[in-house]
Amino acid sequence: QQDSASSQGDDPWLSDNIPSSLLFDTPMLERYILLCAQDVQGGLRDKPSKSRDFYHTCYNLSGFSVARHYEDKTHYGHEDKTKL
Image (cartoon, rainbow, N blue to C red; front, side, top):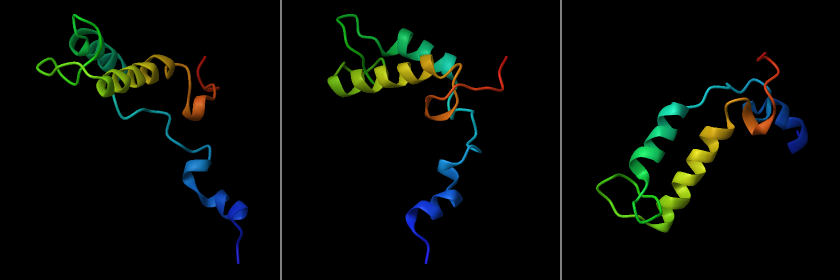
């Protein structure tokens, strides 16, 4: 019978073998948010044909933050020691 602490060693999400690549193109996400998602009256929207709302403003800001801060980081905010 294993306790939860010993079984975490087999969990791939807790290991250092997590791929450091994202599932999206960070420069393109930034460009889309800056060029397409902004509303001229403030706030952010899902796509240019939609109106702004609080949900998509928060969603876009979160995505923009991840894209901007991921550049020199790996998972969980740790610095990537493989980059020069």
